[in-house]
Length: 192
Image 1 (spheres, rainbow, N blue to C red):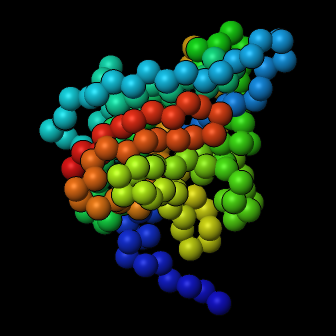
Image 2: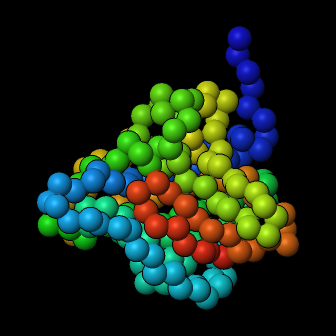
């Protein structure tokens, strides 16, 4: 049985494709005996006039920097509310370590439907503490997460662009907490 896309999911897929971003996260635990806990350094970003998917390219501004395992740093550069009823979070994943790093399977989360489609950032969530709600990564009608998927090994010093799409919280909710397995949580602000 072939199920057609809803307009909301269809727009999400188009926006995801337009973003042209590759999402990758590596979070394998180290075996050097050190207890590496993720750290978070969040900073408020100034509001930008343009909110396109690639607005973060060439910009040093960020919503938050999340440190993960094995030298990985996830820099979130924008969280934009789109007309289709979703929020697109863009950023880049950098390997600040000395060795090439792979994406941890834990970043995909633990939902069977997402895991069966390979590595992704499908385990990411946005938490609205005031509204007492958690927003999970959107999926298409085949269950594929609307995030960067099948991320390559990241060489030391290299970075790759990433994105994730979520259902939009109510219009008056602008502050949420971003969470991704193997990385520290950080507060971010939704624009648009």
